Amino acid sequence: QVHIVESGGGLVQPGGSRRLSCTASAFIWDDYSIGWFRQTPGKERERVSCISTKDGSTDYVDSVKGRFTISRDNAKKTVYLQMDSLKPEDTAVYYCAAGRFSYHCSNYLFYEYAFWGQGTQVTVSS
Image (cartoon, rainbow, N blue to C red; front, side):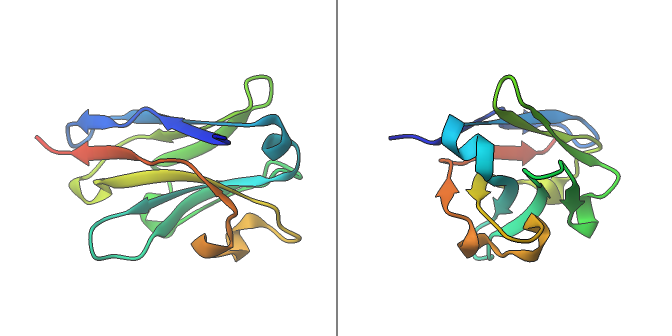
């Protein structure tokens, strides 16, 4: 049973934009915070951003602040990651994940998120 589905990856030129989508099952949407992570070969999975299910507050890793925006559409049960001013170092497989937390999602590491999507490749290259 698939609980999270990501889409939107692809090839984009440096300085360009891309929007990733993450659609979650209803039971996840109601109680779970959503995080976007990325991973490159040989490196640990990095949390890029997350949005709290309780109040919609957000958090970003320093390297993407001012360039990426996370948002959610309750009607569609979808979280978006709008990525602008993309750089080659943003190239990675991007994952969406859901976790049920007592505190803000920014306090938790990737292995504390319970449900994961299949990942979508984003390549920033000319």
